[in-house]
Amino acid sequence: MKVNVPPIKSQGIKTKLVPWIGSIIPPNFEDQWVEPFMGTGVIAFNLAPKHALLCDTNPHLINFYQAIADGEITPEITRQFLNKEGGKLLEKGELHYYELRERFNKDHQPLDFLFLNRAGFNGMIRFNRKGGFNIPFCRKPQRFAKAYVTKIVNQVSHVSHLLESKSFVFKCQSFKETINQSNSDSIIYCDPPYIGRHADYYNGWDESHENELNKELSLTKSKFILSTWHHNDYRENEYIASLWNKYNILTREHFYHVGGSEKNRNPMIEAIVTNYDVSNHLYKEEKKPEQLSIFEAQAKYKEPNKKIWSSPT
Ligand SMILES: C[S@@+](CC[C@H](N)C(=O)[O-])C[C@H]1O[C@@H](n2cnc3c(N)ncnc32)[C@H](O)[C@@H]1O
Image (cartoon, rainbow, N blue to C red; front, side, top):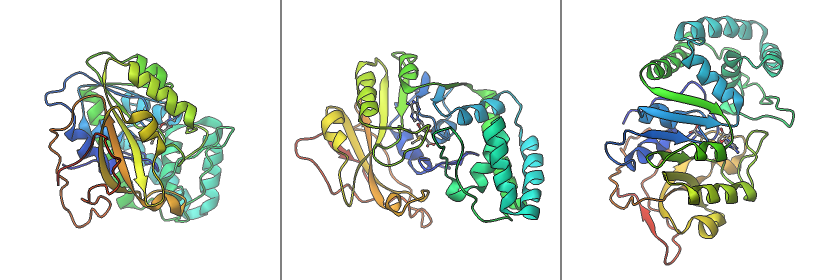
C-alpha cells in the first residue's frame, strides 16, 4: 500500500501504521469514519473513507485542513508562500524563522503553521502554557529548496483532491464531544497522546483523560479502534491491564523516528485495541529494505490469560 505523507507532520504521526489499521476495517465499510484525535490526518487521508468526522483540540491542525477544504490554501498558493518565505529564510537565516514564529503566535495563519512545522526542529508540534508554538529552528536555512517545496505542494495537492471528492468535516473539539457525535454505524479511530510520553498545551494527557476515554468508549454503540503503546524494553503500559484488557488487543513493533528526546526513539510495541472481532484480519507487512521502522517480530511480552493476537507475518 502506498502511504501518502500529509503536509503537516508531528511526533505522534502514524504513517507506518496506516496499512495495519486499514487491514482491520471491515470490508465494504461505507459509513462515517470518526477520529477524535486526528493529529496530522494521515490515517483518514490514506484510508480515504467516503464520510469522515475529523477532530482535535489543537485548533491549528483543524484550521490548516479547513483552509484546504475551503480553497483558501491551494497547491499553487502553498508553492508561492513557501518560495517567498523560504527565500527569506535563506537570506536571513534563523532570524526569519523566529520572526515568523512570533507572527504565527500573534495571527495564527495556517500557512505560517505549515512553515514552522517544516522548518522547526524534527517536525515537532509543541506549545507552551500560553498556547505559543515553541519549537526551535531546525538550523537548515536552505530548508525550502525547490524539491522540498514541490514535495510539500504535492502533499497539499493530495489532501486538496481528496477533500473535493469526499465528505470530510473538521472540528476543533474534545474527544468526548466527538465520540458522542458518532453513531452505531461509525468506526471511531482513537489515537490519543500516549500516556506518560508526550505533553504540551494541546496534548495534556494523564490518568483522568485515559479513564474518561475508556468510559466514553465503553458506552459507545460504534465500533472503535484505539491505538496505544503496549510495552517497550523498560516498562509496560499499565493501562492495558487496568482499562483495556476486556477488549481485543493486537500488537506490533514500531520505531519512532520523530521526537525530541532519546527515550522516545526506542522501539516499542504498539497495541491496537478494538471492541469488535479482528481475529481474522489479514495483515502482512510489506518487506521493504528502507522500511526499517517496522519489524515483523511478534511482541515478546504477553500477559497470561489475555486476548492478544499478533499480526500474522
Ligand atoms: C498522537 S496525536 C494523533 C496522531 C494522529 N493519529 C496522526 O497520525 O497524525 C494525538 C492528538 O490528540 C490531540 N489531543 C490531545 N488531547 C485531546 C483531547 N482532549 N481531545 C481531542 N484531541 C486531543 C493532540 O492535539 C494531538 O493532535
